[in-house]
Amino acid sequence: MAARMKMSSLLTRNLNILIRQVQYRDLDGIERLAQDSFAAKTQKGAEFAMRQMQWLRRWYGLLKFLSWFPNPLKYIFFGYVAEQGRMLLGMIQVSPFNRTRSTWRVDRVMLDRTADKQGIGSQLLRYCFESILEARTWILEVNVNDTEALALFRHNGFQRLAEMTYWEIQPQLLAELAQAQPDLPNLLPVSNADAQLLYQLDTASMPPLVRQVFDRQTQDFKTSLFGALIDAAKQWMTKTEVVSGYVFEPQRKAAIGYFQISLDRKGEEAHIATLTVHPAYTWLYPELLTQLARIAQDFPQQPLQLVSADYQPEGEEYLEQIGATRVEHTLIMSRSVWHKVRESKFVSLEGIQLPEVLQGLQPARKPIPGGMLWVPPRQQTPVDRSIQPNPSKETINFSCKNSHLETSCQSESADAQKQE
Figure (cartoon, rainbow, N blue to C red):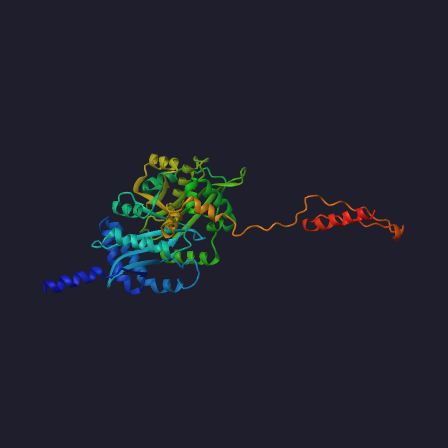
């Protein structure tokens, strides 16, 4: 009996790990992985994972149908699972980060606690790198205290890009901020006509390296008709309302500040806001936060959550000054396409010798000399056709310019001298 159990364990260990796309029969295993991944962190994270799994079970058929043809919701749930036998060992979910799909985002990686996390996680990541060829850059966001995830991502070529801090402003503090009157004379609503202004603001608000990795274009700030309908349906189903606006500078004809806030009308979830300010107009932080607080007063009292980056220190200083609470500290990491090129096509230069390189530069055969004209041709004078020359006194001179006619020309001139 012991020998049989040992033989079965060896067989399961030797089975190859199969990586494939997510199917409906994998939902039970994915739910188990989600509980194992989030339960060890916080109770709030476990509750969020359970709600997300319920949503996925309800809409999986529609999401699978939308993944068959191009549309804005094609990659709303796109991922792969690692399977050994009939057991799921891990799952990865990815999605395009920008409209051109040059940058992709690793949304989450869930691994079984009993499996080799470094090995299974690396296989899932590298399978995505090799399968999604249009991705030139990969990014992800991970908690700074998650040492296992940091080790996994660093092992697969991800490097630090920026640090993000998540803040939460309590309803009492929002009520105090709403008592002031914001000084925003040129506050305008957002439309597709303002996409170029918002793109310029987004470009100016981040360092060059982050800008290159994100690779956002003007079309990323536009909303198509289908996308607007999807957003309206999503807001109706989730009982939320989205309000956005930007501050216009008439002298420079540029946008200097932008905000977007998602408000929960049910009073169950926190309000979520996004804030972008031009580095030369940091005085807009108090004004825009006051505007957000005034908007939130018309909805159920809930905390306001927003995020700040380490390359915007003025915003973090103001949030800390007014008494906002730090909720989470994360790290954005990126992986360039050069890692993929180096891994897939490795070329060694150790065996290349200098004579072999020079021999490759030599011509395949000896060049054949040909006639070349080094003397510029004479300009022919126009002939006056009104005067008819005498045929008896006409002389014709042949110029011998080619090398193969030179001998015959010399012999003809010698014969002419003997006759004289």
